[in-house]
Amino acid sequence: MLRTHTCGQLRLSDTGKSVTLSGWVQRSRDLGGMTFVDLRDRYGLTQLAFNMETNPELCLQARKLGREFVIAATGKVIERSSKNLKIPTGEIEIMVEKLEVLNASKVPPFTIEEETDGGEELRMRYRYLDLRRNPLRRNLELRHRMAIETRNYMDAQGFLEIETPFLIKSTPEGARDFVVPSRVHHGKFYALPQSPQTFKQILMVAGYDRYYQIVRCFRDEDLRADRQPEFTQIDCEMAFVTQEDILNTFEGLGRHLFKAIKGIDPGSFPRMSYADAMKYYGSDKPDIRFEMKFVELKDLLKNKGFSVFDFAELVVGICAEGCAEYSRKQLDDLTEFVKKPQIGAKGLVYIQYKPNGSLKSSVDKFYSPEDLQKVTEAFKAKPGDLILILAGDTYKTRKALNKLRLEMGSRLGLRNPEEFRPLWVLDFPLLEWDEETKRFYAMHHPFTSPKPEDIPLLDTDPRMVRANAYDLVINGVEIGGGSVRIHNKELQKKMFQILGFTDEDAQAQFGFLMNAFEYGAPPHGGIAFGFDRWVALFAGVDSIRDVIAFPKNNAGQDMMIDSPAEISGEQLKELGVRTVGL
Ligand code: ASP
Image (cartoon, helix red, strand yellow):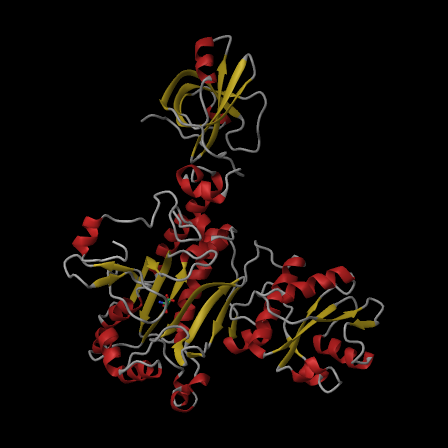
């Protein structure tokens, strides 16, 4: 071995030992009589000391070491005279007796420190250098621990980890598929799985009643900030269970991870219906670290001559505690905020409930103090609070107020990243109507079961059908989602009809699943968690890129290997693929 210890290992109790450390030169300081080099590996940092008086040759050699040189140093562990108590090895240093340069390094294009001066693109291009930095190392270690703890829990619950294929076939539902041309069957294509959904259901038919997999999924979606074309799920399925069993099993996984990784017990996860989530938070993934619930106000505020409210489908507000003294400028800022195109409100009405009990609003012309008082009562507001109201079409207004609520939550410091509030959101609608294509889409996916009591509505009012579908939300982030599945061929066929498939299409695309359902499919259901997001949440980072070793950039490119890239005419020919312009 080129080392006896790692750079994070030695302590005061090791003083006197003869050791060899290997690693990268983080920095060196030349103090005349002494030269110090900080040596780094993934375990930590140890100071190497070189003495000009006792060993001038070695000291001169040390002075020539550049940043990121790879070296091996042998010497004695000694107590440091000026200790650095910020790092675990900070009480000792190595008085070096032998130095070997294992490899030189070019000057790195950015600093490899806790905080770097490198821009995003540069760091992606030199990912191997960025990965040497502590923040990324910590994130990858956390990711590893979470994967191990997931496996521990799932194994203890009797789940089998089973791999499903990556080369499958394209189906029209869901996102766009990545496709892979077949060399042997010209004109035919494999597709990379968006998830192992159909395979895990077939495993249930096959009798593997508890399946899971930490698995890569691929979706060729339009790129948005923090989307990765390939990402990792903890994908799970169970047979002979009800929705309640599934929720309990995976609440168990959640609690296990909280306990093992964060050392906290979040208690049992509260539950909220999709309808309530939309009504009280304007979002299907409410951040419940803070209250600030929506209150609908149309009944209180209509017919007073303020036409904006009179004609609005929904008048709805939130109460920001202790913000009554916001200045004109602050209120104008909030109005600007809600009018941004991404938020989309036309304006903002406010009521300041002054600490002395008086009321001042932006609509004083239309409403008497008594009218406004009633509004404060609807919120159970206290003097000192600020009420913010939006009006318009129900869906858009709720969405806009959700953003304003989150903004106020952030401004008031109510979204502490170290506080975790999980939530189950239940009873999602089964279907979503798309105005553009004039057809229904499955809100979750086409295999999701309607609530049995809502099945008759499939014929009369499909929009009202609720699904046995659920999401796990933590701090306003959707961490996972799943459903009880349809396991009856006829119901599955009907679902495909509602989604606009002809029987032939359904047979061609999903015949294998429907056929399997004819051979004794047990009742089943499952869930998949976005592993990258969960790790990012626990790591306290905003971007999943920071918890993936080799992520793609926002344009879907890997800057390090320069992918996607062209392939040779020869390869194209072999694959039977013609491209425009070739
Ligand atoms: N396959 C689903 C998804 O990727 C999750 C599930 O229903 O289990 O969203």
